[in-house]
Image (tube, rainbow, N blue to C red; front, side, top):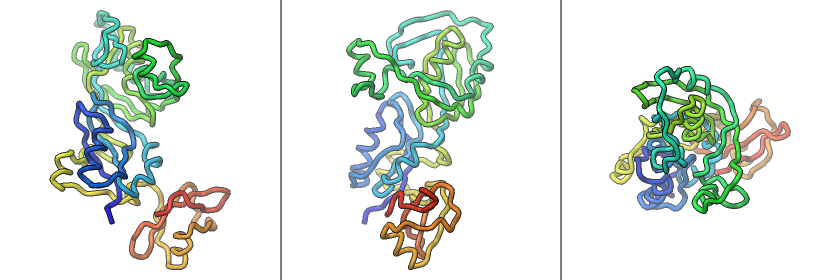
Length: 281
């Protein structure tokens, strides 16, 4: 039986997240592989990859907070909000800007406009398709939570900062918003994803590591932040058969059940004060 679990990959610049998945399918000799949050080709860093049965918990891993180290250039606006786009406007950067205070003011929950160069669909069509066809479209707004944000360095018109953000946050859009707030525009020049919840870039493998068989999968039950309960044979039988259980364990959200051999049986969730199957393995 093929291995199942989670693998942390350090994506290099210049390739898509899908490119990583395609290469891993070949290296790990399985079609059941997915990622839990796209990184643009310009970006590098941590990709959380689900393998085989690990793909069953992808939805639980996409909701996690992510940490980035971003670099932005002031005084420029492009159509993609990053250095690879078409320059639309250039401005002088005043010397008296309070950059640190302005960036810190974005530590909040706010409605962020989705960038036109993104794969989000409006009326069944991806936004970047509207952009490429020079068609106008109303850009959707999504509520995002910038949980933490702090300046790392400021060197003339180049600013580096760290941020911890919720699912669906576009760092390009955040930088564009900061530039608008400063009144001088800003674009993203570099982006590194350093953390996804408890997973860290320091523990990630390169594609070369995987190619040389120098990697380890994280067990599905260890990747999730839910209580783990070891059950006896009677309860194991019920769980394997998807039986609805009484919530005698006082679970508030979800629970992971394992058997006496520490094998993963399933994930149950609380619905109407009962424990019902979320995923079985």
